[in-house]
Image 1: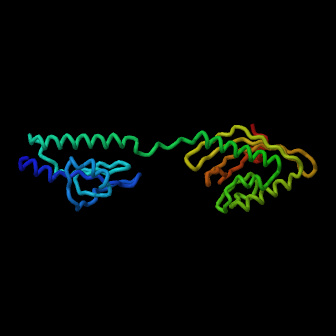
Image 2: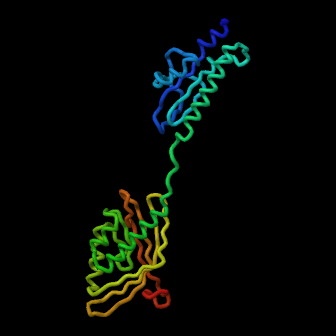
Image 3: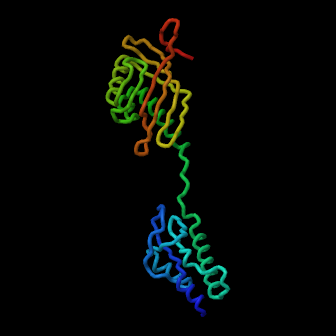
Length: 255
């Protein structure tokens, strides 16, 4: 072996080190250990994965970091058989590593929009059942249990702040209409964006007052939803009716 080829063999450094899955290498880590040749590369894969090397070229995957020091790569113009052999070996190992790491990356996020919409529709179904049963506890189980929730109801005051305040609103509502109650919800439309969503619907309620008289009202409801611990809950609600500007009276039977 001539001196040039021997120098190339001793100087070539191809180092493989393991990095954490999902990690991101911003720069090549420093390498202070000995270099090794292409012929030793396969064995080094097994026993030196924890090594690190300095270099000017870095190939980062989700499993490995391949580093090659350009200063230690043999002269491409050399016609030495030994050098050509090492170059071919390096290319083969490089391509093998890339092929092995195809598919190592993170899987694409699963689109859960359809399931989330179905879950929210089920939530609204539970609300309708709880309303018809006049079960305040079952109704409030569908709202975020915190005092940051804001509700704009169709009756005074202007707003209810917090879960506890809104629960009292429901208790007062059913106390005013002690007889049978029936709610029908239509035109529900839900839009989901990650862990938050919003929806709107038309709700027609038939109530029975203290005198036994039936009272009907149609309201517009807009709900904001939040996914908490995998469960969709209502975090904001706005209930309203149109107002006739000529009489300045609410329209309870809007079409």
